[in-house]
Image (cartoon, rainbow, N blue to C red):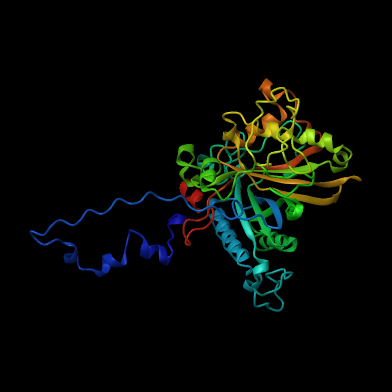
Length: 435
């Protein structure tokens, strides 16, 4: 019997194999009388709704975050299933702020089952929002690695290791992993506690590969979006996470994407840790910074339309040679606003980070996350426009902002949808698809 054939009592009673009605009702009750009208035709079943998304994608951005890449230590699919079940259980405890309470009672002479820094009583302030993603190495396959769990045949079609783009300085120790976790919280200590708790409880099956800590941008820095460490509004032209139509078009996997069936309703995630050379940036004049960005730092308006609101629609038809907004400006390269460029938009969810010094300079920057239906068509196409466009209308060479940016870690991941029912666990659809 396969692991997924071990039904719970609830699943058994509600499964088609044996229902309470079938054993309790006499057969004659289901037989129509002679001459009786035939039973009414059952209505056609409604089309299946896609499963809901995991938290941490369209939910409000938390104050603090830990982004962690994890290595799977188990070696069989059955052990992987057990690991994902236990991970799902711990995620639910963390989401309810009950991880500390679940560790009670504290038994003498026994190792504590909870680290205790948040106390031992459920509290809303200790609740975490956890998002799980799968890396290409979990599946394996050609140009990826060994197929440790027999999952290569059901790998999402667009999931690969993250390549190195022009200007990248990727550290292999901080790039790609079997699993990815985003742990969002109201306080940095709560976010750290979440990762610490999972490593304590699941250390038999998981090992930490990398961890990035971040914090949200200062909300009082202005509208329409808060400002990042470079001083500009970050996410002015972001997709509206509250718009279901925009999410369906750009973020959630659809049947037309021809992905494995278990991927329906999920999304691809790109994670990039980008160090920003703040001391060098701070030596530039405000005018020079505006030319690098393509917007005015003071109010976020476009250099081409300074009297219009930052979110007002416009295009660059009146400035084809880049005399007002340079062809190498960040916002112009990221979204040239030509017919067809809309297809490469994605949902951003980013944080700032600061971890101290790096050889006498600040080690600070951006934790960039992008959710999308197709990495090649959306993030990668945008990245190529930024660094090495193949369209003369966009100029040549990289965006000038890249002089101040050093991407050094992250990865490509697939984020599955949330379980469709309380009886399922995160990742169960993947394991079922593998057989």
